[in-house]
Amino acid sequence: MRTFWVNQGQTFEEERRARVLWAPKLSRPREGQDVGTPRGHWDRMLEASAGDLVFHYSRGAVRAWSNVLAPAFDGPPPFEDPTTRWSVDGRVIRVEMQELDSPIDLDDIPLELRTERDVTGWPFSRSGAVKQVYLTEVDGSLADWLLSEVGLRVDVAQLSAWPDQVGDVQIEYRGDRRVVVNARGEQSLLRKHLFGDDLLATCALCGRDLPVAMLVTAHIKRRADTSRAERGRTDTVMPACLIGCDSLFELGYVTVARGGTVERGPRRTPMTDDLARALDALIGRTCSVWSEATEQHFAHHRRFQKARARSYGLS
Image (cartoon, rainbow, N blue to C red; front, side):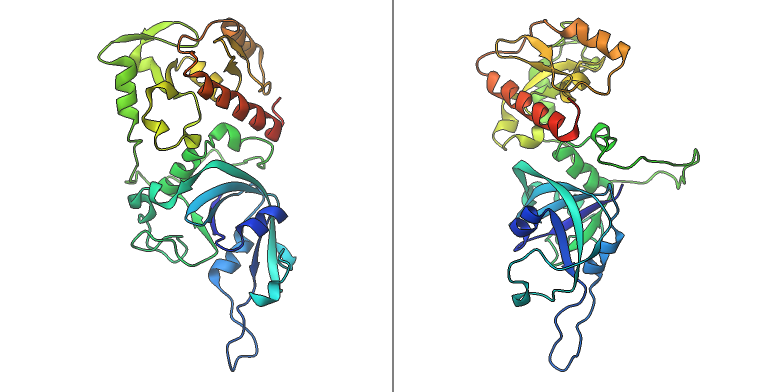
């Protein structure tokens, strides 16, 4: 799976409604030219394949992500009056788009990630500004950061919207490489709030007492959907164990109902006998961090998981 970045300053709404990406094949002819010239960032449309992922940037923020449904094909733009802007001879990519509840502002993307490359096909300039190009590819630490911010995990990338990944048992290993990683600024403070200097703590879902090394600071409301102010609030997180509760909650196998009861979530597949037994051990328990104050975050989690299960056919 490849990851692309598309700039849609004046075309985001039009292409969103049409569920496509569109780019001309040639620029408009200049004075004295019979035909226009190609552009590499337009020709990159030919590189996208079914299953690739695209981040949509418009008006100063990443506003959506989408799955590429099929390779590019020749077609006119999805605009009512395209002749005022570009040639009608272009390429179309059909996509399935998911808009973000909380767009990612450009300034929220760490500068060191925006400037980790200095190549023509990178979406940012040396200063970290967005280049005036249409389609570019992102990879490495920046791609990982964007995927994390919008809540896409390996689990989601293996769903039916992506083609099967087939590979050899031998990978092309080129040695370790140095990468720049952006740390979530609030994470260490929130973890300090939950655990302090304790060596043992209790999972909020299963109630087991465990070493704090086996507990994570789990976001009740998906972090990608929280505002900057919410990320500093201590009522948006809870301790969840690595034995399974963190994943079961994040993936939507369990949710917390109003009142604090752990319930079976909207996600029902894939399912195994071992997973079913793990769920049965949680259902009916009381979440220790539920309160009227945290209910708004648990309610957001229930809505998000229901929408994701419906979108990906997981219910």
